Image 1 (tube, rainbow, N blue to C red):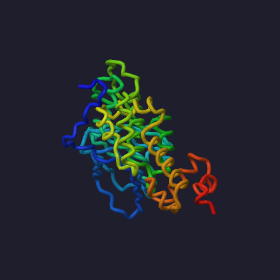
Image 2: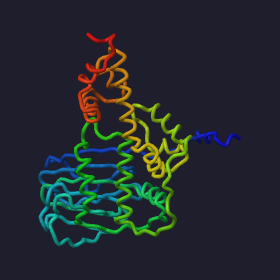
Image 3: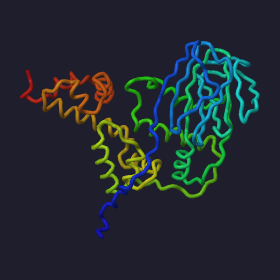
Image 4: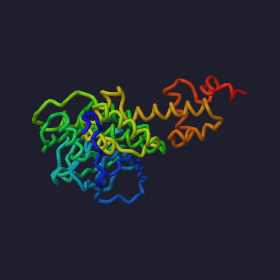
Length: 319
C-alpha cells in the first residue's frame, strides 16, 4: 500500500448529530406557559423574552445529558427571580443584572421563576460534545460541573453579545458557524466550570496533507453550507474538536470563514466572467438572498458587489 495514500473514508451508515439551531420565542403575556419545557437533544441557542414574567415556575428538561447556560439581557430585581435545583430552592442574595449568567446541569432538573419582564439567551450544551472537547484537550471524562448562579462571566457575556444579532434572523448563523460557536462555548465551560483531571497534552499540529486536501474537497462540494463539522471531521478520521483546531492551524481560519471566503471568490469569478444578475450570483455562490450576499461581500472586500463588478468586469462585458 502506498504510504502517501489517503485512508479510505468509512462509508458505512452512521447516525449524524442532530442539527443545531437558534430560535427567538416572544411571549405576549397571554401565551400559555407549560410547567415543563423540554429542549431538543442538540446544541441550541434560544432567546426567550416576556413583557410580564411567569405566573408559575418552569422545569427545564433535556432528553440527553447536557448543561443549561442562561444569560440575562434584562436586569431582574432581588426577589423577582428564583431557581430550584434538584427541587430545592437555591437562595439568591442579589439582583440578576444584565449579562450575568447561570450554568446548571440538566441532570438536576432545574426550575426557574421570574415575576417581572425578562429577556434571556439560553444555550443547551450536550455533554457528549463537551466530552469530545475534553478528550481533545487531554482531559479525562468530566463527570461534574460546578453550579453557577448570578455570576459575572465576562467570556459568556461577550460571546452572547456577539451572537445576539443573529438570533431569529432568516440569514442567521450557518451550521458550520453554529458548530464552531459550540466549540468555543464548550471549551470555556470545560475550563471554567468542569471538575477536570488532566491526562495528556493534546497535539498542536495541523492536518496531514491528505486531510487538508479532503477537507477542501468536502467544503467545495458543499458551497451551500448544509455540511456539519462532524461530517468533515469524519472524512478526515478525527474528532470534531481535534479537526476544528487542526483545520485552523493549517489554514489560519475556521471552516466557516474558509467557506465564506470561497463563496466570495466564486462570486467574484462570476461577476468578472458572466453577465448574470447579482441575485443569481448570490444564489449560485451559496447565499440565501442578495442582501446577505451584499452585506458579507462588503464586510470582506470593503465595497459593494456592484461597485466591485464595475471595476473588475472583463472588457467583453463593459458597457
